[in-house]
Length: 159
View 1: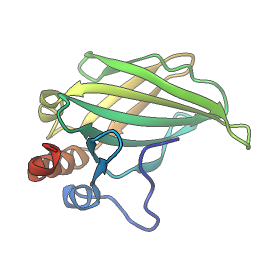
View 2 (view 1 turned 30 degrees about the vertical axis):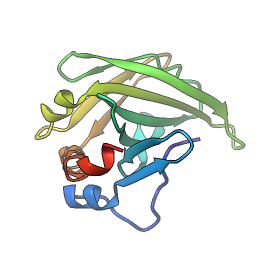
View 3 (view 1 turned 180 degrees about the horizontal axis):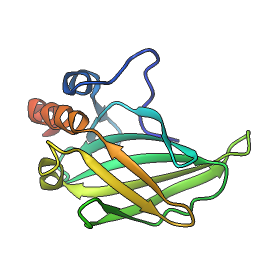
View 4 (view 1 turned 120 degrees about the vertical axis):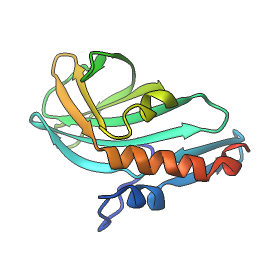
């Protein structure tokens, strides 16, 4: 399971694209409001593929980078550092072997808003470590569009 969905035929290339395709969702059962950025699908990384998105929850001080890592072998990803040697908080969400034999591993990286803000102009470059390693680059426009959507949606995120 991956939170969000890839949008067929939609190219996410600007901050406005991220802003326009980020979604606010309210779960009536848990009384939780979330904001999810668009899924960036099938990013090629070191002989594998990654889907990712940013999300946050109302009344939560943290932001989450959700990652689905697909490879022909287990990655056992358990840690990550950004390009500035800052250790990031990685949490394993689950894993499974797909019907085609590929391995899907789901992880999240958790950080505060100020971390995103200090990377607004440079984007993020994160190296993930485990049995395998890979580098994921998140462009500045994705972060800019996501932050803009949060700021524009403050009323809805207070629910």
